[in-house]
Image (tube, rainbow, N blue to C red; front, side, top):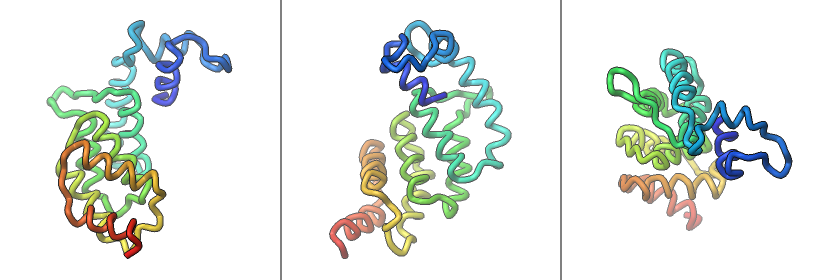
Length: 169
């Protein structure tokens, strides 16, 4: 659904050239001002909240990525938000995250302007312990560095690891 929101916004909420998006779907996902239907996305967040421990690493990073695409950080009654829960879950399970998962999750947090230092430390540490960075596609490396730069989070060992990889050392 987050991809659909992204497409709908780019099309201005009207039918796209390929005529694939129905206006009723647009009305379900977006308000008239092209903001996400917060009630709908909050409901998804609430349902995910108690099941987040069942998500695999890819599912956790994809959930963050999806909400970043929508541009919405749902808050809960206790003043925490979905990204706080995702960060806690991901940091504790960092060894399960592959290159794409790491890239997606830090990109998502940077995109919604949530510089969660524990998450960024954990994901950076995970990259540092990898024997090599061959599983990182250039775009994933770029997105990872962009996320750290955008949030202003410094992780010297991560930066050294990536620099050495790029330099072929």
